[in-house]
Each structure stands twice: as structure tokens, then as C-alpha cells.
Length: 231
Image: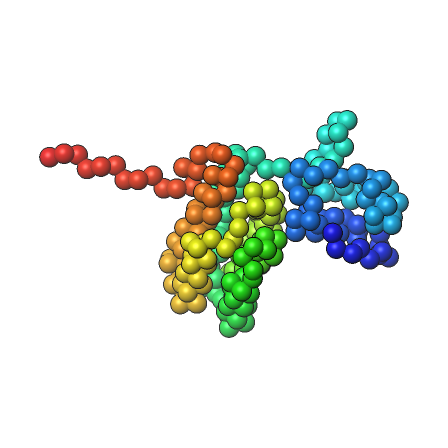
């Protein structure tokens, strides 16, 4: 884990430190947290550790188990399926709104975010995850919709847990091309093309995740058309 600097506001900064460690994959789903060990590592008393753990449990990042302590929450296959179903709709909306409302500054931020993601080492899982989330976050910001931004923050937390649990790389050939397709449609101000490209991207990546979790992914893939009746 990265070096911890002892803060002046111990309670809040311990919370932010542990939250960041979970969302960035320094502490993985299923990993247990000990108050004594954390206190010794961070150089603080058990009280701010306990308070931070309680807040993270309320955030849905940690789970307290009787006689077993606290661990980073693991995501079930059903929750992952539901999360990606919602993400498909929200990412599609974000891309469509970004195509309509993005500014020159947004366009630069999107190009930079995607170029940085594409330049990242494909075998650096944590860097890939952080940069992928940053690209999607830039897309949501370019939509200029406050309600969507609020929903996006909660969804990003769920997506981060899923990514750290499954360790599905973002450097997949299909998803890399799809990122470019979304950006092209957004910068071309083609809202419908941007919406459909974003939704396809979420379905593609969601299917990879759900395959890793050993659950059917049909909920994320539109059914094939029924064959025409024989004459």
C-alpha cells in the first residue's frame, strides 16, 4: 500500500485513505481488515479506524461478519448483472448527452483520457482499471447533468469492486475499439450513435465479467431475432 501521511483530521483522512485503498484495488474484495493491524500500520489509535470501518460499511464497501471481523465486500453474480444492466442505460445516456452538450474543454479532456488509457501498460491491471474509470467519468462530466453525475459516482464504486474482484483487463481488443467508437460519435455530435456505441461497450465488457463470475450473461445481450416462418 502507498505511504500514509499522518493527517491533522485523523478521522476523515483515515476514512478517505481506506476508501481509496479499496476503490483502487490495494485492498481486494474478500480481504479482511484488522483494527489493530491498521492502527499500527497507519500510526493512529483504534478509534478512527473503527469509525472509518463503520462508514465504509455504510457505503457498501465493507461487510462486518459475526466472529469473523470485517472484509471488503465481494460482489455476487446477480449484483454484477444488475449493475451492468443499469450501467448500460446510464452510459448510453451520458454519451448521448455528451454528444449534445460537450464543450471544447470537454473534448480535450475526453481525448486526453482515452489517449492515456490506450498508452497504459496492458499488463498493469490497477492502472488500466483507474484509467478506464477516469475515461468513463470524463464522459459523464461532459454530459453536464448533475443528477447523472451523482448516479455515476455510486455506480463507479460498484464497478470498481467488480473490476477488482474479477480482474478482467480493460485492454481487450473489442473494448479498446469501442472506446474509440464512442468518442468519435460524441465528438461528431451524433447522439444516437454515441448512445448505441456506449451501450454496446457495456454489454461487451459486462459479458466478460459475468462469464468470469460463472453466470449467464443473456440479460445484457439482446435476444436474436426469431427465424421467419417457412412459407
